[in-house]
Image (cartoon, rainbow, N blue to C red; front, side, top):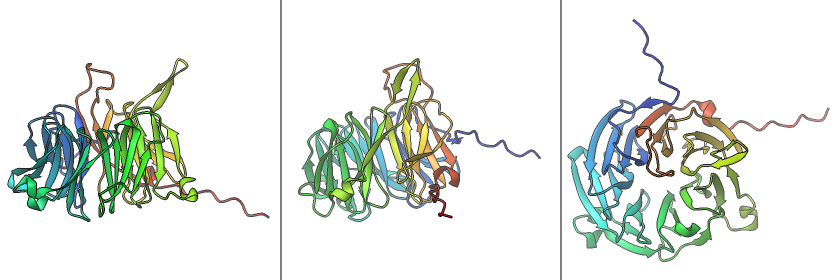
Length: 342
């Protein structure tokens, strides 16, 4: 009996992928279930370990984001202006509510039990999914933003909102009346992605111009002295620097290191504390649209999906790869200690 061939260096490709651009993918906090939203108007639930499609909901327009509620249900943010709850094991969906423009981001807070959505209508809305039988009962509050919302991230009770115009608002979910901090991105170009550090001390923010900024919530001089930015997802060709958008950031849940994915088709792993790149995976077929580590950090889901940064052109099919993560790829390397004086 011959052994099965090892998975390719890109990881195992999931069967039944979306048929158009992948807007996001996320692992469950409870299992290896993977939720995937797409421009093909679908949200799909996969069992990533078994490589099986467990369910699918179709929407009235492209789905721009999704997140889990529990292991078999989630929420979706749709370009048809709706926010939906999707219950896969009962094949049931309901509309939590609506924005006045496409809904770009959705997050679920386990701490407050609320759904938070950000839209191109320049608002943030908080919903109580327990009141979902009527929109008036489920909407908790609407909070104006300086511009269209591009990315959201949650850690504990902190919510970071990144908008067009390089604005960043930091909220405490327990008091949403106004931002705790109003900031501007330290990067010169449009924000693509914001993700909070798992330890709750700050956030990483990426831009369309091949850079990532490492920011800290502590506004003291000592706290702000730790912030920095670095270049990534670039290459030199014939003496010219070619710079790619950094679409995705995902933190490793155990080690606090993080992966970035760019339109160059590469996934890099970084040690933010020691300011070092730990690993670069083999190039993927096309742009990296989204990344997610599983709850135990053993798996990394990679959306290889053209993001139209060069307009409409022939491109590789949209695909989801699930790779096993080796500790050497994500574990910070110990700092070399200086030799003691002899």
